[in-house]
Image (cartoon, rainbow, N blue to C red; front, side, top):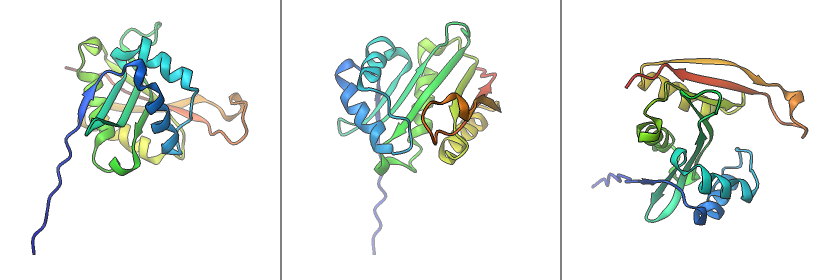
Length: 168
């Protein structure tokens, strides 16, 4: 009896505006992330490529992180969405995407990573807690957006996860 160990290799890169439609489909396919307009993903790819990361396997987009540096917090990177194709989950790709982001020259002066997470999104909670542990940082969780701030019914509150200080 023989066993085959499959190792997956991902290629990481900055997004281009031509990637926006596939990114939109990836986000839609997660069925857990808020799906923004296609125009939103076009803007992220066009104007925020330095803080967004695409993961590819066999030239197919299988993961995406959208992030930006809040103008009033120059030492913070805010992670908006972490999306991993369903067939790629459980391979550590979400954390690899975040590591790739933090290793970029554009994040050299980043000391904190922030992200909002809903209480039912256990996978994201685990991802950010695991990243904090790997970075040997604290992970503080606080209320951010209450349920009544969202116009659509059924949207959960969002808590903010703050990881840091990140020491290089």
